[in-house]
Image (tube, rainbow, N blue to C red):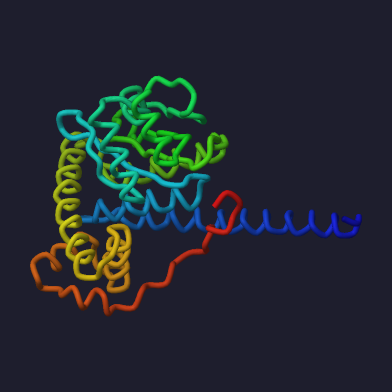
Length: 276
């Protein structure tokens, strides 16, 4: 390689890095606005948490994300995940009563592990996570002041840790989503938390039913069925749970969802960045 080619190569790498930084900054701003826009009555909590998981994957060096929320008894429940694979991994974590998200929830602090192939406090979870292609994890608390609502779990496809700025951004996203869930009414924290969790659990059941209907009719994977459902809701300015309920009730047809034009992605794509 000549000196000229080397300099041109370095300039290209530098330009690409700068472009990714600008894109990430724009998407970060869009994400915060999108979550803050949910601070209205009767917002769709599942949609808020879906935004949190999908944007966490896009903005951070994470391959997948999942969310657990605590019910009124303090038991963690799987509420959202960026893929079905991660949803099963989160369930495995709860069923075996070990994992970073449980430690994060009980301590109210960020818990990270950059190489689950090495000895860890969670041998069963670590082995299952590595087997699924996620050798590193970062669990971030969903919190409002002293109340810990649940956790955001970030899974990496390589044995690397998130950088400090990325961890800080993940916590900021989690904090804003937590505020949205409790609608910033501190005097009724417990009641609101339990009410929204119950709403989330009910919503998740009907959404799973709608996903199953779409998957069966169209021969789709569950992830693709959910993407179709969410795209239809957004393109028609409807709540995700409302569309799922209408689909299950038969007031919205499956064909109507399939025939709807796919909504354009509302923000820049970061999929071509290194590591993705």
